[in-house]
Amino acid sequence: MFALALAPLGYLVLGGSGALGLTLGADPVRLVTDTLGLWALRLLLATLAISPLAFVTHAPDWLRLRRMLGLFAFAYALLHFTMYIAVDQTFDFGVLGEDIVKRPWITLGATALACLIPLAATSTRAAMRRLGRRWQQLHYLVYPAALAACWHYYWQVKRDVRAPLAYAAVFAVLMGMRLLRRRLRGRAAAALLAQPDG
Image (tube, rainbow, N blue to C red):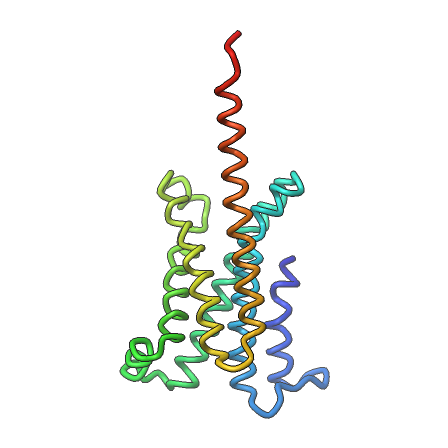
């Protein structure tokens, strides 16, 4: 799984160097930026899919992949934003600030990244022990991050929105599965409490 998550970045590096006959096309900057952003979204949704997958398959081993996928999602999102800052804005932070305020899709992208930063920073076991219950509450930020990322993609595309809507549908299904699981657990707990003593 580690190699699969790293493969898109490897493809971009090889394409940028012209190795193995690979190329990044006529607009390499746009291709690199878009690819990094798209894989950040894909890996973020894959991270959200782990819990429902473990629940449906009754295989908790899937949960071991969640932290790695989440960190890869953050890394791709950070690289995507870095490309925008370094190449599109040439480190002009004044223009960057204006874009974040005036362009809603950039506002949403920056919001998604801002949500992911504390998650990446507290992804270690030591942070889990130190934060205790607050760690789980903090990591609920993954939901607004994924929502903002889907919305960012939708507003950025502008014309053919079928792909962004497909990713948004995946997000909606994953959230629906969480609500269903919570309801099933509530019913199971209620049935257990309703059983007669003895």
